[in-house]
Length: 303
Image (cartoon, rainbow, N blue to C red; front, side, top):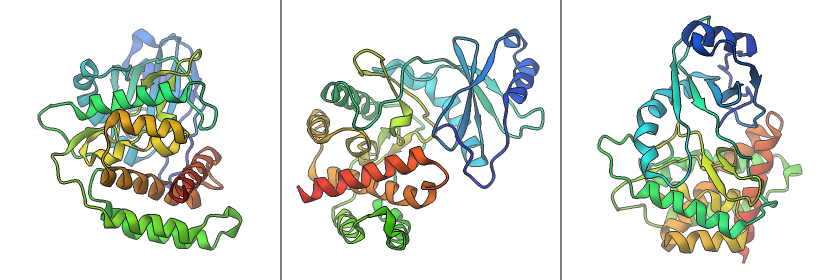
């Protein structure tokens, strides 16, 4: 995800830095306009470069580690996917006091979808399922392990700590006992025992672009977490974006079994529980989505 500086090791970036980096390494683009792209993310900053390109710069070392992964894998994934994805136009190197690799991509038009305000949720659900299915169907050698792609038990300590932290923030109104019960159910179902599948692994609303007219999926961005792992990891849109009816369309289109669905629900809940205490003051957009996910998961469980 791209945008605001909330990590402790963030590096300051601005339009002047972007102009110097572009002029020094891609002089053919140095005369283009540079404009910050507003975003609620936390890992990258983005600057529009002219009309048809965007510069993306990691704000922390963790984000910088994802850049070579995108450079290597995006060109190999692109021919196999049903939606537009970022096209790498330039591989930037550390310079001008900026310490990490950075990228120039082709600009992808579209808008970020908003949970609760989708124009065609069932159609979007089918589009998302098509993308996830295409990722799962990839057969490419040398695949890395996906971020978040391992066993659910790896999330246990952090999830429990987040639930206890939220008990001490009563103004958030989270039913922590219900959240704990959902998490316990998640831990009881079997782990994925099939071959690891290809994952985007960060299908948050901010990493999706829909067209302005019908709200259909136009592009998926930010592949820094990609790799292979548990297919439950790419079920996040069922709870962070889609309403209940479209959620079932998404599940049916993918043919998700009960155990994988429960793991996906638990993973989405865990991510939201961890995000809410961290971002409730620092990043209102991410905190808002975390509240939405928690509410949707608990309503789904209550039936």
